[in-house]
Length: 162
Image 1: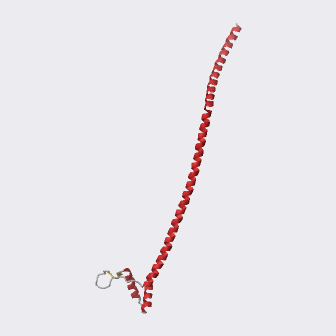
Image 2: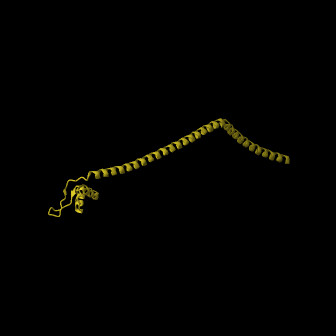
Image 3: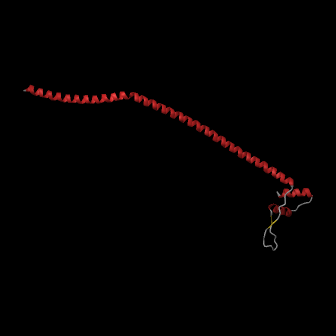
């Protein structure tokens, strides 16, 4: 930057600027004067900043604004892409939730149908339970009858032998 300023000064004034002048110019751009080697104890003194030549500032500003525009455009593009990605993810998630809702509705409907069918079969299931109880009772009666008939037969054979 100092070289560009020195060149600009050379062009405008037609005089040649030495390296020490450009170093002084660099320190004046920052606004701090280098400490003198004299007896001031190394204290830095402030000096008014000299502005570079007008075309150099315009060129630098234009360059800075162009680069900031490119940077901001890139940032905004990335942000837009992020939002598009989020939008797509939200759409997919909502579709998945709709599918899950449909599945749960089908399961609920099928469960209701099964409950209705079970309720329709309940009288028959009750009859089956009653028949099972009756069969068990009949089976016990058959065992009792069988044991009684065996005892009766044994008595009959005993009487017949006599």
